[in-house]
Length: 150
Image (cartoon, rainbow, N blue to C red; front, side):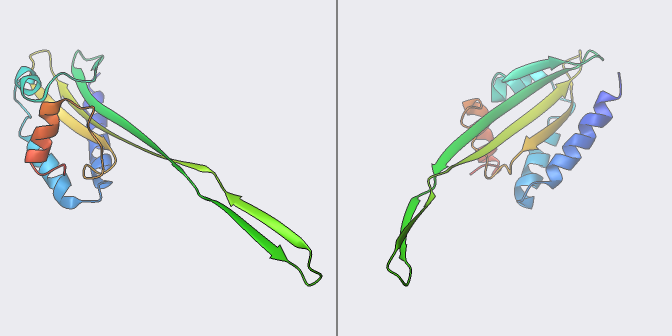
């Protein structure tokens, strides 16, 4: 049962090294680490209700704040006509495909039965690039105030 905490800490370390902006990573670390040992109810009052919750086998709970974004881009269609030496025409049509760009952001906060926050982790794209409009407004504003989000 206690294996969840090391697993979460390892995942947090791995995901944080993937951030492309070290200042954003430092700010996120600083902000979230300041919550370790504090009451989850205070966190929820400040940042809003989580997107999902998960009860772990050891009795701890994880609150997840997550957003997913998907944008589709159409490639332009190009029509090129060529003539060979004999004057025969060949038409080449390219493009027209759809390219889909996906990203997500998720902040997980683990707390004990006593309501004490024990750990947190961040997964997803760089916090600077992440569209978190579906996260609670208070969480968005605080992350912007802390300089983590633009």
